[in-house]
Amino acid sequence: MKFPSFSLLGSDGKTHKLADYKGAPLIVYFYPKDATSGCTVQACGFRDRHAALAKAGIPVLGISPDGIDSHRRFVAKQELPFVLLVDEDHRLAEKLAVWKMKKLYGRSFMGIERSTFLIGGDGAIAREWRKVRVAGHVDEVVVAAKELASA
Image 1: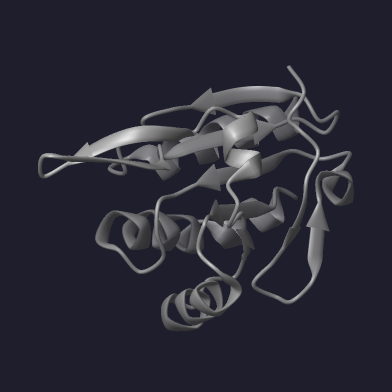
Image 2: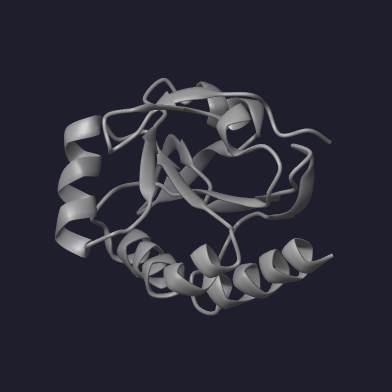
């Protein structure tokens, strides 16, 4: 299955499109909210593995419904070396079925189901992780991405 094309504003102020990343593997992860505990641990995991991923030619993009100002604060505070994309209308999240009904403390609401996609250079989804548990997840994604890059 092909990853849906997108054109989203990034924390760097530029518009990013799937076509910008053609020809090499790409990691795209969806997370619920900037600066929350699990999302911070996940982002910092990708931050800490960024040098190894960059050396292998594998970019990382984080996506949430938060706005550009929130993304910029999160990037600055956590010193994230990759771009966070704005999906405020959750259009891309809906296309990938990661915009879901969630329950927390007895209330129901719509939100992001933490998910990661490894996209091949041809734009096809090579691997996907849904309902992600943060612990150990980044390491698993990095291994799979490096395998794809060297294949």
